[in-house]
Image 1 (spheres, rainbow, N blue to C red):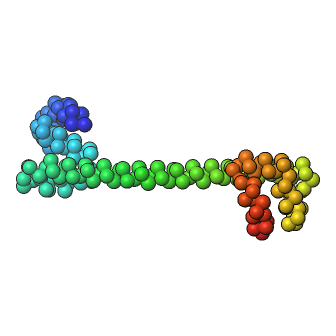
Image 2 (image 1 turned 120 degrees about the horizontal axis):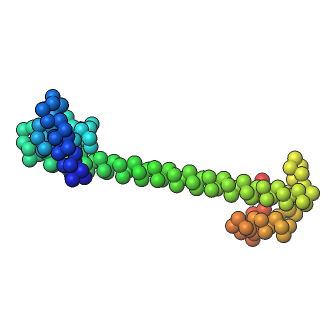
Length: 158
């Protein structure tokens, strides 16, 4: 990005020559580069960078490097948090869709078996439903282990 700053510094230096803006912000190409870099890239810390480097010009590249490193680190941290949030939301949505899908399929299968949505299902009914081949096929299609489900049927019913 140094080349871009240099090109625009030359452009602004030429376009503002002889004007009050040119005298203030772009008196020379290095000063124009400094103005563009500090106010364009480091707008919030331009005054601090200017104050640190006023007494000793050697400090300018060090403080600019530090500010760039800090900004880049914060940006990567924020991107990491954003990616993590998007991943959590995607996983939650995927799980919600899967639950909705299995519930829809089970409701349709229960309707075929003669159960209505507002019916009270007893423990024996639940055991019989879970032994139906079509219901087992649906739950196994979503990764449920039928053997473990059969062993835990009382806990699942509660």
